[in-house]
Amino acid sequence: MPTSERAWSLRLRRPVPAGTAVGVTVAVLVLTNLANNRWARSWSLPVSLLATGVLLGIMYWAGGGWRDVGLARSSLGRGLRWAAAIIAVVAAGYACAAALPWTSDLFSDQRYSELGAGDVAWRALVDVPFGTVLLEEVAFRGVLYGLLLRIRGPLGATLISSALFGLWHILPSLSLATAKPALDPGFGGTLLGTVLVDAGAVLFTAVSGCVFCELRRRSDSLLAPMGLHWATNALGYIFGFLLR
Image (cartoon, rainbow, N blue to C red; front, side, top):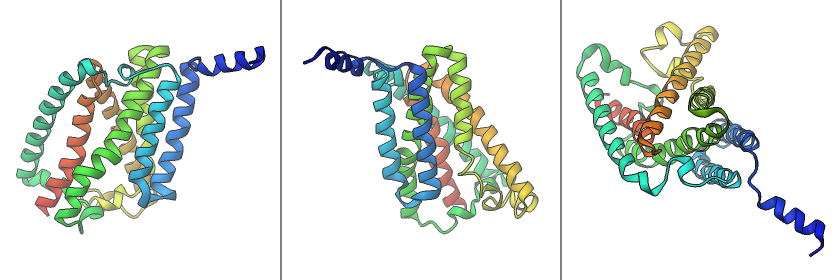
């Protein structure tokens, strides 16, 4: 092999800089967000699974491994224990909220009012864990957090990945003002109401992202934030179905 070809081959084997990998990761997430919310909504599950694989490939491209995304074998047991405890706490909190008349209405959502038991089971056991939780946790608390940790440290990794997590929810939250009966009287049907509710959703998810990052840091496992993420989303479907 000529010298120039050998040099090119060696360059291909070198890990790319973390900053470059972060930029590519963000680009993949922008395309995925548009595909899932605008271009191919009915294909969101396979698109999310494909994007998850691509993101893990980016971490490998940057010289990382399972530990960098919070999925090291040595920490899986600890992560599972954290996840189980978190799910139990969220379930207890939802049960209390469902039993109180002034909080039970928060479970109502027009987007899911026509779902049957099979639809709810699909959402809770397939769509949420594999179409939402897996992609978002691998993306924001796995790949992005792991890459940013190298160049910004824990605080910077938490703040930047959580801010991007908030922005990720701009498109999915556009219909929130009219979908939630608790919000519709004050915010539904107006541009200002839509903007305010969407901005609130972005801020809330950004703050939630900080909590998810801290769970990953403390447990040294991506399974802990995955447990919280699944519980808040999937149990919301289940309690909403039971209360309607």
